[in-house]
Figure 1 (cartoon, rainbow, N blue to C red):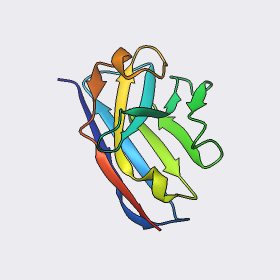
Figure 2 (spheres, rainbow, N blue to C red):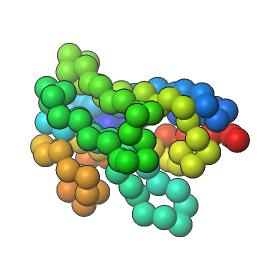
Figure 3 (cartoon, rainbow, N blue to C red):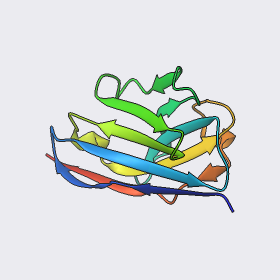
Length: 120
C-alpha cells in the first residue's frame, strides 16, 4: 500500500522557518512535489524535485525562500521554508509521481496535508 505522510507543519512568526517532511512507503517515485491550499482557493504548486535532485522547480512566490531536497535512501522529501510570510499560510500537501509537473491533476498519490500558519 502506497502512503505519503507529511510532518513538520505548525505555527511560526513571520520571518521564521519551518521544515516539512514527506515520507513515502510502498514504492519509490521519480518526482516529489509540494502543493498548498487555502480555503476557497485552488491547490497551487509550490516546489518539486526529480529523482536525482538535478531538476527542481519553484513557484515564483517562494523562489529564494524555499528549498526542496530528497533523501532517496529514506524515500523522503523535505521542504525547507525560510523567511515565511503570512501569505504562506496554507495546508501543504505532498504528492508523488513519475513525472515532474506543476499540475495537480497529474498526481495520483497524495499525503493528508499539514497545516502551516504564519502569524504576522
